[in-house]
Image (cartoon, rainbow, N blue to C red; front, top):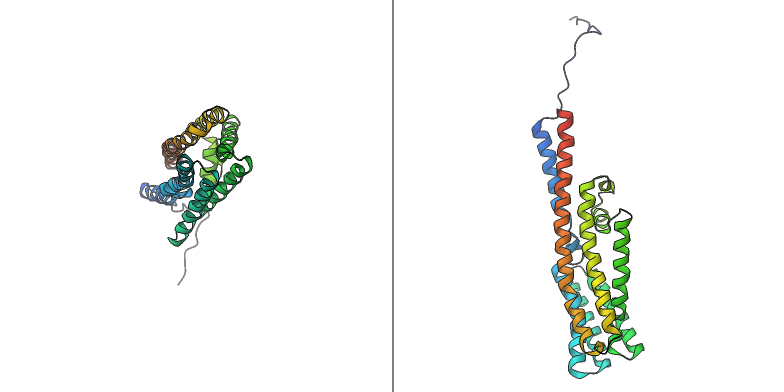
Length: 245
């Protein structure tokens, strides 16, 4: 059987491009991957991790207020921190937040023991707030808001998001929220540390400005990340529609 030769100038069948259904399926796949991505709150051990990290400080403040004994307060705080770490390990939960908290409590307890004053227990947290606030503020000034950097680093998305003005604005707001929290903690607690009210009010103020303010800043962060994600989806949709058009 003979086959007719194909002329070089003969028209070829057009290659079908992506249909609207294909684009929608790709968008759904991206959304599913984004939904499976861990949140910043999950990286910190969830709400339970944030709350349990404050338990040793609560115990220290309560024991010191009742017994007025620095050694007893230190032992109680460290003991509770160890118990929290063991409890999370037994339950099979993430122990990294608990271990970090245990290390922080141990350092604070050592400072308090060395200074011989209960207010020394809070000295590390005061200066840590200043350092964190400064780092977050500098990240905004150099146009690399730390919330965005950490979020995309955790999820392995790269740093291409910095080319989007909408994403930059959203992450700027989230990062500045943490700057306000850290700055307020440092200013108020540093003033109390040198005042006559240190032994009476510093511990309670530390608790009031701890988890509540952190949850408030976390809420702003979640809102900003959702806004940034919606902006990214809109940009991807526009890019997908351009070749089809």
